[in-house]
Amino acid sequence: MTTDDTDRLAEVVDAAVSLGHALRGCGWMVATAESCTGGAIARALTESGGASQWFERGFVTYSDQSKVDLLGVSADTLAAAGAVSEAVAAQMADGALTRSRAQLALAVTGIAGPGGATPGKPVGTVCFGWAAIDAAPVTETRQFAGDRAAVRRAAALHALRGAHRLLPERPGAAGNDDGPKTNS
Image (cartoon, rainbow, N blue to C red; front, side, top):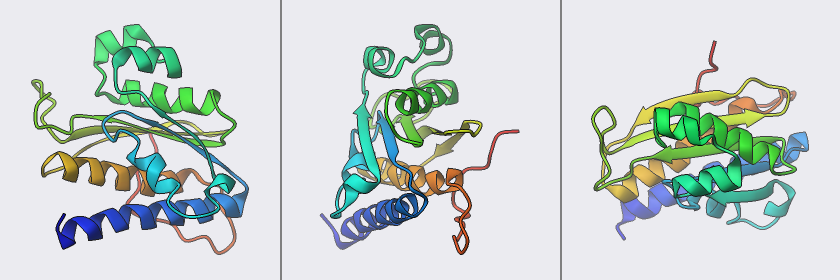
């Protein structure tokens, strides 16, 4: 592992710790639903002590059937839109939220490579979903460059940063401009 790789992993853990402290500050917990990141987000969220105060549970749903079985993703949506779609990411996030005691959920599904690309969905395509109690779900699709490890790290970082946007406003809370924009 290079120094750059170590720095990038540390950036993911730092984002997870920052999200954890913000969650603790508003009394919320988070659940994760991960496909292409394979549990990396859950791992980052539990790297520091005290994570049980903000991390409720994680779902690693790599296969389509696991998305249906564990998160309630519609088989019809999977067939129509494909696993790498905002529609599936939204259902994954909603499923993680409703199948946990968390107030916030994030979901990631994508093509980390080196194979798996399809027409219109090249390697590096990642779809995100965020869901929070009393809020409209938010989705986004991003394209990340690099090898499999780089795509997975970038996706984990983006998912964590994006989760900040759904947290309730608190006095003195700083926003993060790297997160998703809400759907309108």
